[in-house]
Image (cartoon, rainbow, N blue to C red; front, side, top):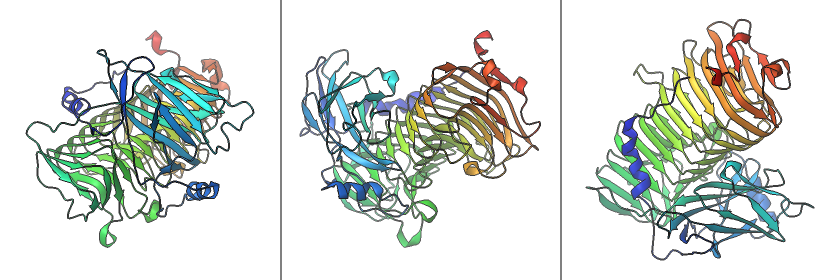
Length: 553
């Protein structure tokens, strides 16, 4: 079993998590409940307040690919206190109702960095949560060890670690709340950099075509209407807590990226701002691309909230040394994939929360150019995915070149709701473009799944995009280990191919995969409630399936 490697060059990327943050002296402080701390919530003063149930229904139901008037609203379902302090709670659309959220930075007052948050939720105007005769609450992922209690009309929990904490009620995906808790960090410009302040307002693509290197482009609190923000080498885009980027359709009918550059190096995006694509068309009529970097060396994104994604949200194509951390992303539109690395080398995506109407965390191989680049040495760890329509984690289609050494480690799935295609799953390999391409040495380790309606929690599929038509390619040495699905309404493992020529699947390992409390064993391979092989003749042979054998090697 090939061990995952992380290049030493990633040491240089980690500077982002230690020296950058937005903070103003006017923000609130709080302590109590054990280890002392101060809390700094993200706050957006212009968020709309929905006046009544009709307004809530109108906001919730506006799920077309067309532009929408309001990106977020003040949550109509919850108010929150943390250590006695009021914390603003917002809500964004999903494909299945709205999802409430809050983003909170915590500054410990203890020498050892410990802290304790007493979280109190007060549900209001709820249709499903506390109106149940015996309401239940769970905090996901459960591996965080946070439990919540319902007493009267208050939901309470104690949180003493960083991460995403999603409160789900009555084993249901309706009206959840996700609290993002991250470490507070002071802002400080990198050595040798100057700070260029950008004031709130409307900007053309020409005005935000930044060219000066060794510069922090600092967007303070407030609303910005932008077309395309271009960043040069050796620069940082910093979005202060409360900065709200309202991405506008591209000028003159073009389809520009919202934040981008190509062929550069040493670019970072940091802070605690929000990027909103509500004003743009989505789906097949999209008039805007997302946050896209092409052939950039050493690129990092940290701390953003992104809502109403209208296309692939965060894309890295043929990049090296990629680091994505602490992102919260809500998307419901067609093609609203979350974080995608294509033909990248040496990448880490960690500690993010995504709820999307398409794939959440993925690699692809979309660049067919003969530039020697392919997907290699990528790690997704400690992320949380809620998927309304598609795949949670995987190496997904568009496989123009090889994909190797990709590890999905200690991630979680809240609710995987897609049932429309046989390629759907929580941990997925999907080939398709190139008969000569191979996906090999891919590991899915430690995935915690709360509820899945997908075809299978582990899925290997060779076919067309979105589970349609023919596809080709080779799959070898795929490892599923320590996977737990608490409620699984599909298979454990699904294999499918549409073609025989230039297609093969071999050396598939499942170790300690537990579905609905049952360990998947060799004896269950013959049970079609657990395993299904729909491959063409000669594509897969049973001797290539290894069940609970890795400890023997």
